[in-house]
Structure formats: structure tokens, C-alpha cells
Length: 100
Image (cartoon, rainbow, N blue to C red; front, side, top):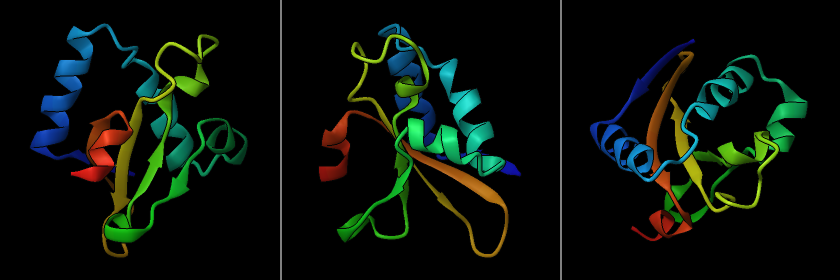
């Protein structure tokens, strides 16, 4: 599966790294999405979004770690591109990004 990131996602991820978010957890989460690993997807609460975000999905990367509380509100929004196995990372941050 090919993974693309939007420029805004890259910017947001860089900001989270400066705030010491455990961004290394993203790799395991992305592998779970690519392999449709249902137990891990349940653990990271991978689900579809509704409303103006219909067609997108989100997950909570920190729920894969043992320290779930500190960054529990951290989400990553993504989508799959047309009939291709291309994962497009769209946004990351807390739930307030859903109101943008």
C-alpha cells in the first residue's frame, strides 16, 4: 500500500513531534490499516467519520501504546483514494480538527 501525506498533515505532525507526541506509533497503526488487522484497528478505534468528513476515517494512535491517557485525544484522519490502495494522511491533532 502506498502512503501519501498532505502538506498540512506533515506540518501538523512536525508540530506534534516538537510537543513530544509519540509519533513513532504511527508506523504500527499504518501497518494495521494496510493489513486490515482487525484486533489492532479495534484497539486504536479505527472508524469512519460522518457529516462533512464523510468518506474519511480516523484512528487514535496512542491507544496502541501502554501509556494511553496522556495523548488519548490525539487522532489521525485519513482516506483511501479511488479504487487504489493509497492511504492519504489528511490531518492530525485533537478532536477540534474535526470542526475545521
